[in-house]
Figure 1 (cartoon, helix red, strand yellow):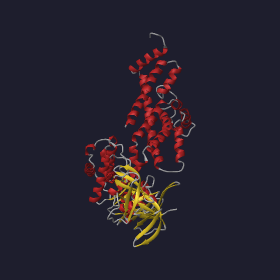
Figure 2 (cartoon, chains in turn purple, cyan):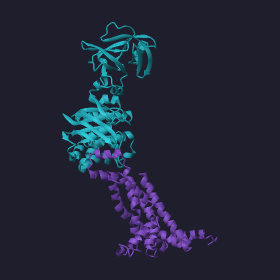
Figure 3 (cartoon, rainbow over the protein chains, first blue to last red):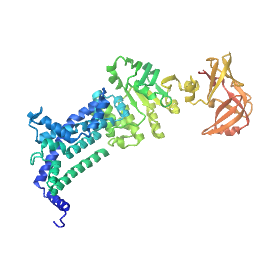
Figure 4 (cartoon, each protein chain N blue to C red):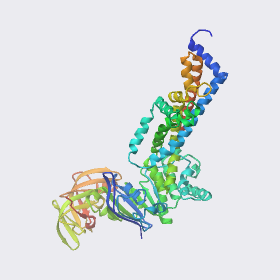
Length: 231
Length: 360
């Protein structure tokens, strides 16, 4: 440790932690990926069909609904955390599930967090299919179901971009997992909550190491996103 | 026999009325051209006739079936028709998958699809691109992919909505040739909208003119171009002379009309007292001196007022008591040694003077 600057020292130590595959770092990273990927999967399962329904059906208040969804893109993560905490705690209606302070609860919280985003982005992805394309599909003799599947297939890359954005929001949020998961070491600690804790304990090298990993994940998502969008 | 019969069709989007009082019938095996200015409702009418969207009102039968009453048969009827749009539309997939779409919707078998897609692409000269991504092709090639995607389903009625508006002359010629062949050999009924008057004349057996949301006139290309029914149609089909006059007499099958100091005779029975004389510039002949033998009923001296080259023609305005615009070939203008201010003789057959009632 040559020049005594805690940041430089922390950085060198961080590289060391990553390169040597420090068990704690690996464990936290894997949990983070597991929680956010699972949340993205469940959110997609709910949000993609709902988004498609909103797009394909004309109903009263459709416009208001889409605007509401877009507002919820910026849903504060701590608010989701608070609501999910109340729902999952012993006094809440879902207390019997015993999900509070478990990865399962964190998955539920992140799922709720990104559902509006995925729904809204699915609607806009499908809206990107222009009128003439829809006329063409109809003119080619597609049934109602065939029209739906063709439009979704045509918008697949835009829909996938939305899913990746949702994953990015899930893995980078700290508020919801902190409140619902409780940041328990070895059980519910993920990249973001570990960074918050280690920084407050002046354990900078650990924070920087986890920060580098989190940024790499975000970078990876962006690389995939730009590959998808180039299609 | 009429394959499509439309009566009193109306279409509005919210407060915007796009079509009103549309009456049109399409005969089996004909090519019907729809011409009209942009925004006159051609595309909307084609979409309604192809059952892509419903009319707001009116009667419509397709293949003899009342489609207003029988909405549940639309999909089956639509699968017997096909439509090509103005903008080349391809889907984000291979050329093969693009062309196969309509067949897959109809539940064709894999082998059948393979064979027919091959054939359809050969017909438009694009077999070598069968595995390429359709979006990578040029605009003209994409439009040919779109055309083969329609033709592969063997439509009994083919709708073409300004199919060559954005294309280069070669792609345009290819598409026109395919459509003409298809009509002749497979007896496919074709409805083509275009704002290219020449294309309308080249392809169509009959022409319908759309003006401001309705079909204002249908008839043979000759009737549309030489006997337009109203001033707006006459303007749209490019008639150079639309001159107000007053009917003075009718005898021996000829109507005499006073136009300023000049009297013109026409074969058209008088449609009213106040009329417009509609005369195409190319029907007016110019001569250096009084012709010795001339069949034309209208023959009079005139003075050349203006000469305006419009290759390959020359637009000559002559003053003979009223201004007339004559269209002569550049060679003819040279032979006449035309110059502004010179005296010429004008001849014009009575049947080239078409009379329509003056509106308003």
